[in-house]
Image (cartoon, rainbow, N blue to C red; front, side, top):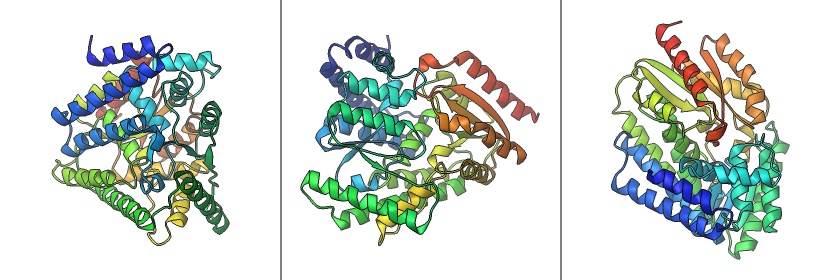
Length: 421
């Protein structure tokens, strides 16, 4: 039995009757993995990607170690505000993805369904709900979310708030940017800061917020430069690295580590070879746990996985002098917020910018927003001459994935691209 299998089995055996012990198993397992990443990093990754794996593990462990200074958030929450106040963000998608990577998600999915959560519900949210309701996840200091994109953000966080008998703060984000909409979101952010200050009995330090905004802007600028380099270079990556990049471009924004990663990635990319072979843009989450998917994009010559559209959904620079107003604008202008056309335009522009030959449109089970618009996205790309494939699957529940069919269809798509069909 591998260490990962042992970790998953230990969770499966103990999560229901011994939740505190299970919490300890998870913490010890993550600590061991972080130590392993320091001692023996994956030599198949670029140095910047090795660094990214370590910081994502660090930020996933931290809320479990110090729940009294943590906040449970969704992927799209503006975490610059939290980093400025030393509040550790724990996001739904990150927590569940790391459990899935350790084969520990199955028991929590089952537990949540036994408590009445529908089997059609997003598996990321269902895994977290199972971990909370079973007692594995400790009570955080704050529950903070936006209503951006995902309907489950409202229902999941409401259920968790009721379970812990604590308030849930939600930032309501309009679809279109107008002066009134920006003011509306800005006022909510101001009220949020007042709430955090009252709960923590300390004020937000304007200089700390300014530094968080500086880190965020520096990371965004380096990210944009990296994408420019990626236009003409072959930068090796993997499904797991792209998952880490999604977390970094959201939960870590505002931290010095996010800035360091993107600056290192930019430096690494400038040492990479010229682009060659077929280039694939991925849309939505990746089933990173799939060994065959990892092998396909890591070992197959002539095929390059570029980016997921979730890594560049929100890249608006922030104004250091008016941070809350600019954060409000960034929330509203998110490529995934509002009408489908906004996302279609964003994906199409990136596909052209990176010289993508094809795009994989992944339909994650339970994600109504993405799956409902996938044919419109496909039409937009194919009209521009970019070949696409729609693949059904589950980003966080390996038992809900037809792996053989998934592999066969993806390989056939890549072979068609290589043959120029």
